Image (cartoon, rainbow, N blue to C red):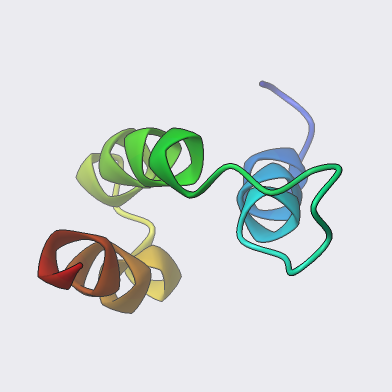
Length: 52
């Protein structure tokens, strides 16, 4: 995704309580490359994914 903020928005949507969009495993898979690219805001979410 090249649109600024698009990845974070997609991850947030997948982690939402909305059953229609919820996809925790998918969100966790997207968080890993975001963190490896230097997105420090996703680091805590990655820790949460690994803890569950």
